[in-house]
Image (cartoon, rainbow, N blue to C red; front, side, top):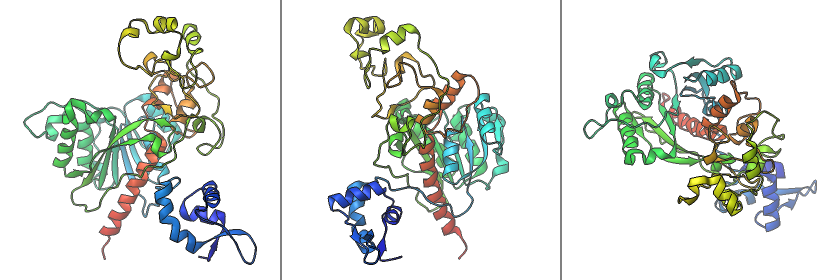
Length: 412
């Protein structure tokens, strides 16, 4: 590499934006010089290398990427696939989806129509045998619902969990025997049944031959998603594999609702027009009085009492009621229906719920990913999804793990 690097070359080399480099130049952190022959403003490579470690600490991953190139074609089998949020994220990270199981017929239509080449297995997971994929798939993923187990003795075994969807997830992992499996769930799984449910899951994975990496809750806002959604990630690594799995590193930059719906870094155009739910007139009259980032407490007292009814006198913030999102904040977690009283997600300027395409943007689905079924079905599919960009970052972490694993297991 040359002794000097242009602004663009430097930005690409250290994974920072040009704007960041210009700011650093102004602040004197990394000063550009005049290239002797062309008189262009350039950076000395030696300066960049010497100071880069300091910048990492200082700007903590402002635009550092978790991106990693797969060394082979890695394959994923996805369970409880929904409308494809996690699957699209995995695809963006370079993993190939060999099959997806989903019970909801509209979600299956969505998957098939967007990816005709995907093998969509529609129906109850209990009715499918996955042993054809034994030792042929690199990762099994799945967002199984959180259900209580019945306990038999001190250590919960696979047989004790029969009848739950986690049992099915574990059964498939056992049949397929992938190097790594990833389960995702709501944060509430940490405290469900005083943590016993999660402990049961860990002991079942242990029984079928997988060590569970310490569980983490990933915040979507740290992974290029303009939404305050959290997902618990449960990672099992096959016991014969001596490779550490590392969670994706959080980014410092937080994207807001404006980044989701307007042209900018996340999307190269404004959100497309689409259909959406409507509020009844009575609700419009109330929500019109709520400012951006406001909620029911910002209403005049008499209207508060009337709108809240009996719950006006109950304790608790109930901050989701009559909530209008601001342009300059990430959206609150989307639900399966955009106009529920407890979890209001009102547009910043117009007095209406977010449309289907706005919902999809907040979940970082590409604009060309179309959802099937009624408007209510489409909202449900989007609201239930793993945000695509979060799925992509988890995908990169899997690729990094698999690269190390296959590199180590190659015959010398």
